[in-house]
Amino acid sequence: MKQIGRWLQRFVTVILVAVILMNGILLVKRFVYHEELPSLFGYSMVTVLSGSMEPAFSPGDSLIIRQQADYTPGEIVTFGDQGTFVTHRVMEKNGETFQTKGDANNAPDGVTINRDNIYGSVRLVIPHLGNLILFLKSSLGMLVMVVALMLLVEAPHLRKRELAG
Image (cartoon, rainbow, N blue to C red; front, side, top):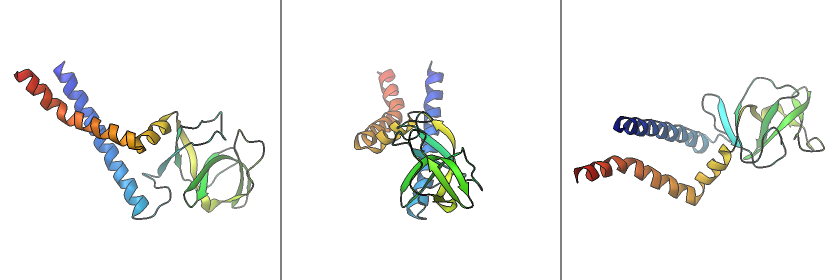
């Protein structure tokens, strides 16, 4: 039983360190290099905030997107500028511009978008992960993370004291 506990603790520690390192890299790209939507190995992640693409995905889902050379009608792409991102389906391509529309919307988007404003196409939908991310970005979420990290670090020492008597 002790071996399983140690293995689990090491596994969780490795995952936490990897997540912290990835977030550090993304923060540097965002704030030092001023990337609007930083990527890691060509992939970026966005959180869905509206229901304009239901049933394909819902508010609170996370999307993994990847930039590519070209986009075709039917693909779901994330686009925007100045920190505002929209993820809709490409309906029409006209040279370097695209007409998009949310699956749940009655009409196409009011403006066409340029190829340069597309950040990538959706590669993976992770249901509800965005809700967790939004929670962890909140004050309460930060507090929960700090307490959980402290417990992970301190748990082996508390266990040793308990066994020592």
